[in-house]
Image (cartoon, rainbow, N blue to C red; front, top):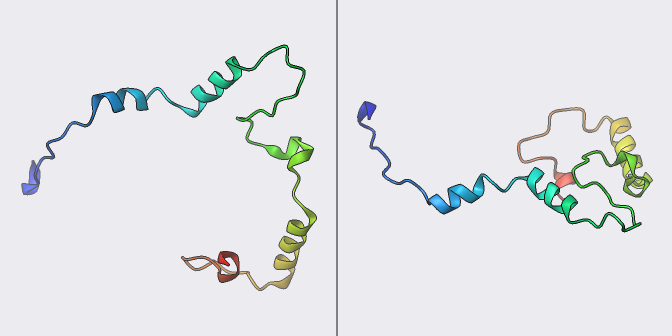
Length: 91
């Protein structure tokens, strides 16, 4: 190795390596879709959709909206936050 660095002498577990490449989020979603009964009349929520705004059951509460508006109007948070975050949000 260059600059006197040592070479690491391990290869990893072949079984783990083989299975880790086959389990993906997309693969899990396809597996779930394959196992959903097509004749079941109940609606399903698409797990891989990513945008909840199309579903009325995933609406943001007015309390959260009001808190955001109040924070913006207060000008109290018009700066980059410190690395550990803002104290009020960590509480």
